Image (cartoon, rainbow, N blue to C red):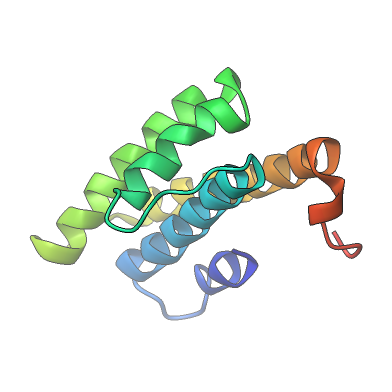
Length: 123
């Protein structure tokens, strides 16, 4: 997740590339929370959707709007990847990266409070 957040701001990267890295970071954070809570999505079980949806249950209702936002970004990413070129703006990429950064902070805080043995000492 940290690599994806860092890569999202690599010099010369397109808005599509920034968005892709920010989305990957957000998704990884959703999966981390889901796994830490003792759940996993089976292969072929819609990992992206289920991991994102689970955010409201792992971190709490406060993250419902963020889960909805990341789900919309997932659909937008699908469009950009499989259907259209140029659907991602620089603002879209920046907004998702900002969300991923905040989610990272909150997931780490949640892990420290609820699953401290899963948090490396450097965090």
